[in-house]
Image 1: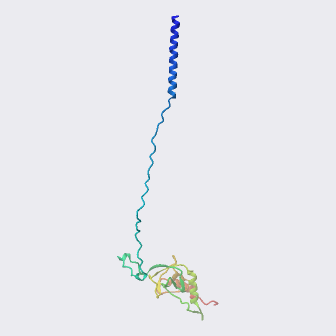
Image 2: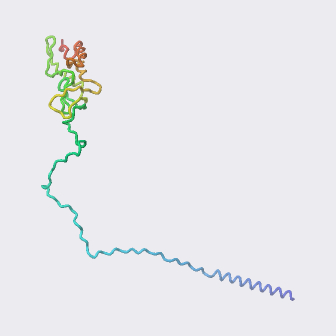
Image 3: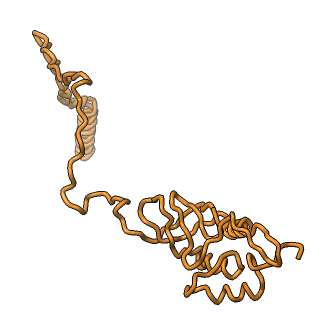
Amino acid sequence: MRLAGLLTGIGGIVFVSAVVFGWGQSQRMAIPMPETEFPPEETQQIEEPAAPTTPQPVPDVTAPQAPITEFERIAPREPLSSLGAPEDPATRPPRETLLHRPVVIAAGAFEAQGHRVALEGIEVVSPQEACERSGRSWPCGVYARTAFRNYLRGRSISCTVPGMPGEETVVSRCMIGNADPASWLVSQGWARAVAGGPYEEQQREALDARRGIHAAPAGN
């Protein structure tokens, strides 16, 4: 009996302890967690500019208008040195120049860009010249001019001419690329070689072959 009473007492103690422990856990879970409060964000205060009490006057920056009659045209100043001065074509020495669109005025003479040029080393055949052979006359000068026009065909020709065109005729050795037009004229008989010049041999060949102005009139 004593043992049964002891066991009953121990069981009661265990039961009470379990009840107390369970109640403590339930109370702990029921306690709400405190909410963390964060400080509110600071808002930036924008201060509006204060309105001016009195309007400020706007300064007048416009330039004064001068009458047109007060302007005066003056001559340009002299260059500080000769290196800065523009080249005067009138004082430029003659130099090789490419002349465009030449206009033939005679066999061995032409005009281009204001220059009047005669080929060096030949005697120019005038369009008014008439040739006579076997007792007959024919306008060999016109034929010679036409032959020279057909030869040039408006091609550019390089000659040594002054910087500014003048009224006088410039005698110059001219070239069309690598071709010598004076040599061609003499060799074809449409111009005469100057005595002692570089085209005497071409003239002898033209005379022997009776080319150009050395030929007989048509029909003979």
